[in-house]
Image (cartoon, rainbow, N blue to C red):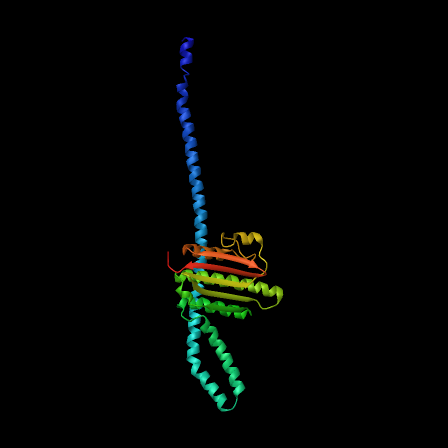
Length: 271
């Protein structure tokens, strides 16, 4: 065999299958890597959505219990009404005017607490308003509902209203409680609702300790950012923002002189 034939047997064409195998290997590796990354991102996204849904489900269970409790209270007040009237009548007949006045004042205060949260509202909304009012009063927080019209008129589903109001009031009550612990004075929480120029305006204002700048910068934007400190997951503020976004609304907030105010504007017509 001559030299020319020996060189020809090792022609570059011999390496072609090997090159093809290497290219295929790296192609498969890249595809598998992309798929793995996609699955990882999908899993993280699904985990966040699942966490949010579980939080909403927990809130709905709590609100159902709150509605049942409010309904029980209203039935009880109605059932005992004539007994209270008879007691007051007896005291007045026997000249115990001051005692009758004190009894009536206590009775009216109890009815006022219930009535504040049920005027014109749907049942589930009554439940959350009443429960939050009682919780705040039990903590000696000066809570005020100032509504020009029922919250139930918001162009949102019952679930959205409950999540929105529940998180707003819960955050406010927690902030007030922390403020009171530091200053040993009564804090305040005000929830206002009115309509102006085709917009529903919902505003919540409450006492609050100073909020770190890094928390304020991402509040209502990211999960995990909260004004409540350690031990809280920061889901509530993000859920509030999501509801406002879904209704094509606008949310703004400001912290000034130990008062935190969040103001939401929602179009009166569903998008």
